[in-house]
Amino acid sequence: MRKVMMFVMMGTVLLVGAMPAAAQATPQTAGPGNWSYAAIGLGLAVALAAFGQSKVASAACEGMARNPAARPGIQLALILGLAFIESLVLFIWVMIFLRAL
Image 1 (tube, rainbow, N blue to C red):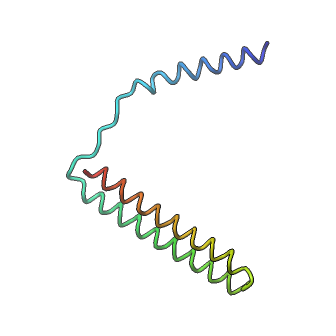
Image 2 (image 1 turned 180 degrees about the vertical axis):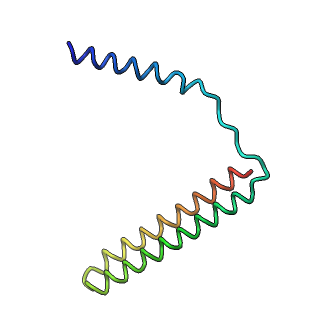
Image 3 (image 1 turned 90 degrees about the vertical axis):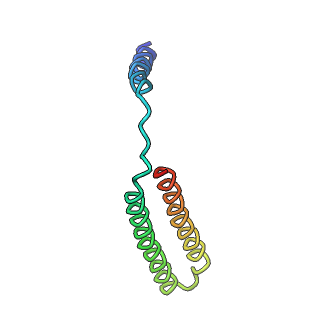
């Protein structure tokens, strides 16, 4: 009975705490004059992604040089890693573009 009461009390606290969060107003979107911030954000995202891609490529080359028999597995991880990094940059580009409109 004690555990049931504890779960009921925790649920009540969570529901009461969620009401003010649900009542908050929606945030205002950025105006059309923020293209400079969007350009800075996109440049930063591209620069950091290029750094990440270079680290992935260098680690893959080092791994294949140390163990040539593991080339297929390393090559698959390399391609997946590069694709995920590039997709992250594209998602950031879309978010910045939509935010700046």
